Length: 429
Image 1 (cartoon, rainbow, N blue to C red):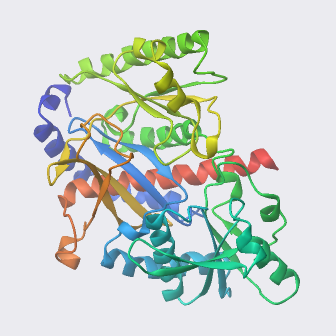
Image 2 (tube, rainbow, N blue to C red):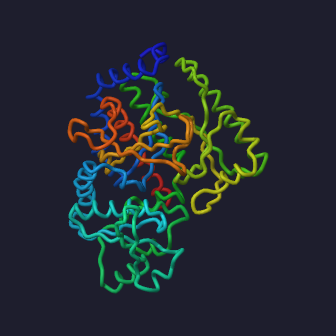
Image 3 (cartoon, rainbow, N blue to C red):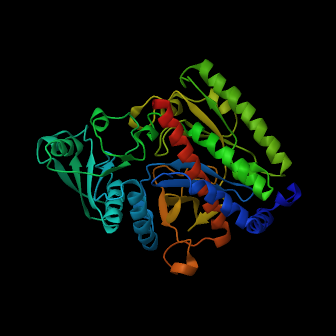
């Protein structure tokens, strides 16, 4: 594909689809070769931005919290894939424990937990939900659990993990597998370290040690291989990025270092824009190298924006989830999104169980632009129905050819996440 054809997003997309379709057998063989020889993450969600002139993974979550946003047919698929994922880890296991976040006031998160529990129960297992409850220890002192109402007025029972461990020690309860839906931002609690039960995803993959830059390094290696198979510039499927360590955003000298890194990255992106005749202005996303929930994220239109950050904006970038101070920053090429759903700017989020598609959603925001972070207060979710021919009308539909490319990128992200977990576990051994 020559660069002169990329002036129009429609032309680019058409040629991209044609090129990938022609290489479909080689691509699938390449993906299968990795997926069949590795233990892929038990589940994951992958954010993809599609600018028309390029599309790329911009985030991969190993503790997805949006199962309530998957359409009913995707949930049916989830039951089958979750059954296979659990059996492959504990062949004769029956009792599963979900470790949830402590978001007991976030009713939509609780709905996510309810749906996840329902999926695993429908897969044929006995399931309990627990959390550490460090902020509300009275739960543990009283009944040992609390019933909460979710955003849909359904009930979900959350147990105190301390009490669960006591029951295990007393021989009153047994669990064969723990599924983490808590990203361990503040570290691995001692009570979790005491457990001898197999845990997935690995506790080493929590945000206390995981780094986004490492994930994108692994992703880039795979994207390079993919691009060689299809014969297209790897930049069209990835984002350029750089990492800044030991940064105090409140110190001028450290902001100056960040600004210099941003200037270099901007120049690299401009060269790619010029090479592919992209007429728009590039931008950069400054984000914490670890963490989630859209915290510690800022869009940068010019490198000097970093140096001149006012105190209010610095404070937003100084701490992330759990009030953890941010010292490592990822500077990532921004990918604008061309999609709007119901006149709201939108981006795709793909959900996978062991790299098998179970659906997803479009994250939308009526108050944001195509260049903004959409994972912020006021966002909305539109359930995704990629299998129009299979399921009929169950949510927002996408062009099936474009969605096939999203699926390839999501599978690549899942393989990269596996490599990332292996590296994290090796670092702790």
